[in-house]
Image (tube, rainbow over all chains, first blue to last red; front, side, top):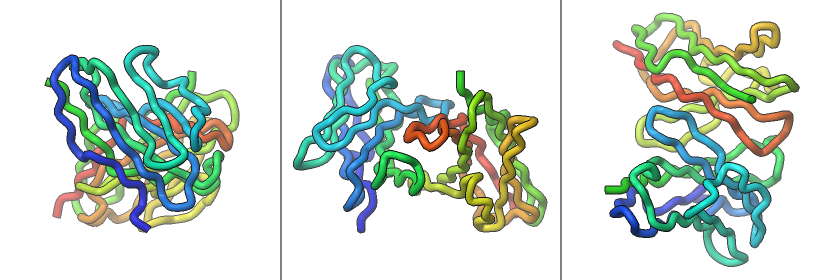
Length: 115
Length: 109
C-alpha cells in the first residue's frame, strides 16, 4: 500500500494562475481531508470530502478555492487566480472512517510557491 | 475558541538528556489529544494519542485536565528523535484536528 499520494511535491505558480493539487487516498479509505500550513503556523483544516460529496468546507476560503473527490480518480484542491498569500504547504489525509478512531494517514504534502 | 499552544519553536538538548515538549490547549468539552511527528523529508505521522495511554519510542504524554496540558516527555533523548513535533486536538471523536504551531526538537550528540 503506497499510502496517501500527493502530487506534485512542489508547485510554482505566478500570481493570477491556477493551482491544482492532487491527492490519492490510501486503498480502502473513502474519507479525505485537506489541511493548509502557512509559514510558522500549524496545520489548519480546510475541507472534508467523501466520494462525490463535500461534507465540511468550513475551513475553505470563500473565494477562489474549491475541492472535489470524484467517483473515479484523486481528490483535487483547486486554487484559482493565486496570490502570494496562498504560498503554503497543503497536506491531504485520509481515513477509513469518519471518526479518528483509526487516525489519519497524511500525505507528504504539496508546497505551493506563488511568485 | 479551541486552540492548541506550543510555546517553544525550538528545543535543543544533548543526547541522553530528558525532553519535555510543552502543549497547552483551550477547549471546554472533552477533547482528544494527539502528538504527531515529522522527521526530516518524511510525512507527518501519529506518534501517540492520550486515550491509548501508551509509550511510543520512549515518549509518553499525560493529559492534565486541570492545567489543560498534554506535554510530551522522554527521559533520555536520542539523536534520531530530532524532528518537528505537533500537538493536536479533536473535539471528542470528531474528524477535525486543531494543530499547534509545532516545536522543532534538536538532539545534539
